[in-house]
Amino acid sequence: MALIRWEPIGELNTLQNEMNRLFNTFFDQPAPTGRGGSPGRRWIPAMDLVETGDHYVLRADLPGLSDEDVNVELQDNMLTISGERKPEHESQQEGYYRLERAFGAFSRSLTLPDGVDPGAVQAHFDRGVLEIRIPKPDQKKPRHVQIKLGASPTQEKAIEGTETAGPQTNSGEPVAAVT
Image 1 (cartoon, rainbow, N blue to C red):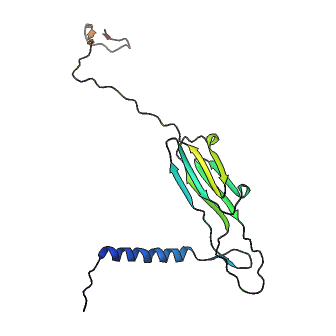
Image 2: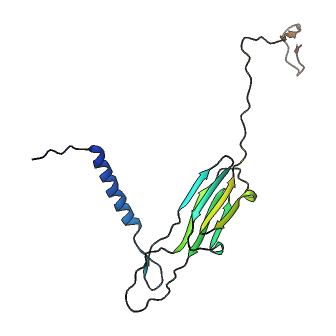
Image 3: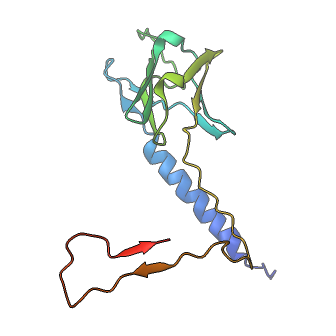
């Protein structure tokens, strides 16, 4: 009989792979498309969001679409990309065929930081890749105060006052002067 060393990390990886497979199977089930009840896969385009020094750059893979098929909106700091990829096979003839490419309407939304100027957002579509450049908003910079160690103030201020005869209420007149 051979002894096999137990690897707890390997067991966790196996469990994670099984859970991923379960959720992928659940969420990637074909959904009816309304075209004769034939099933189709839900399509969600892949997107990357990268932060550069002065911009946020969003890239979305939209293969098979033209710029007329895509809509980009910025409203209330919410950037929304939407569109539709139409199926190329409209009718089913005799026999069987297999469709693996997903199609249908999609919409993806991202919340942007406050202060983004909608007029400065630029979108470029080339070879199936949509690139949106969003300038970062100007942030209030903290005020730096220089601290001098061991130094005393150059001029001391003294408070001088005058004495009054007896307790009186303050009439709104200043009773002390700063020099």
